[in-house]
Length: 446
Image 1 (tube, rainbow, N blue to C red):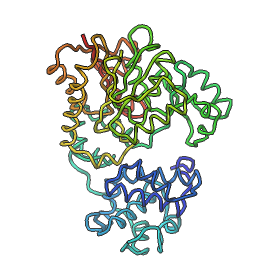
Image 2 (image 1 turned 135 degrees about the vertical axis):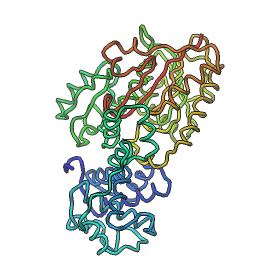
Image 3 (image 1 turned 180 degrees about the vertical axis):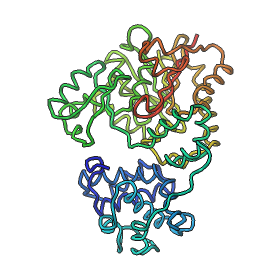
Image 4 (image 1 turned 90 degrees about the vertical axis):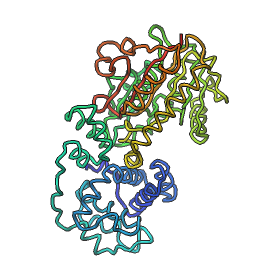
């Protein structure tokens, strides 16, 4: 792993990473655990913070492989009494196997009297974990189970995806979801990507367009200098996955633009798509946004305020009967976002996916009588599973009369549609589309 991507390891950075991973093991979402650990760590430098963030994601991302290596060395995770001890073993193995480091570098980061208490593992055992010969583990006979082991995914999920995709496609998908995601941005306002790229080049930041999305920009370096650029400080760039940008595109009319229209963002979260929709409708349009999480909606309000987007509001309840377009970016399993939120791999289950289906269907049924005739409902998820995508649309149409599916291919044009569309739907699959997997369907009320 190159140093620019890794950041700068230090004992304090390692401590923050270990504390965050421990919180994840206790059930806290990775993003929140990381934010709290960095806050508690105090004045870590930028390179140290990068190391901490990467280490936390990597320990969840490769958890199955790290635990397999531990078992091979005789340290079965379930028999390591304390979660703190499991965390230390995982960290040492990650530094060894994925960073290529020996005890001389790892030792100062984990030796007693810290960085974690309580602990029962002594330094000599951790040194053995870092230095003992590591035999090749047995290889599962089943192709999907081999892939699940190699790319550190739960068997049930890989077996389900194997029903949908041939093995070469499945392996490429898992490999993409097993990597640290590249940073993608949306150029603001809509249609100014070339100008923004030129200005980034003037400031010495290497960036390039992403062909599948009209305003998407990829930063072609591991450093975070982009956040210090004038372009960024002027609000001309917004961090946003390519798939999220495509979902916003799916809200556009087949002819013309969203300018001057009213759009409702029902599940706005922290407001990423809300901001993009605000750019689409312009100052003469209106975006109303809501979410069941008050904390995330507070973040959306703050982001809209920072960009002076006065045509964005957060009424409760949402006036869906006034909206020309309603975006339902539904709560989902997040299987398309596992590169960014790898802790979710180990929290999901087939039962949870079925429960998401019921929740998603319920959301569509709830809004159906509220939207006006002629309105467009865009249903979207960041899931790879048809139970949350096609099946939700199918069940909704069967239960609620008066809605029809509008094909998305004409909106994207032939070249992009060949990559992005599956039948009438948007199905953005990694690695064909960078940054994760997304689904969208357009439902028109008659």
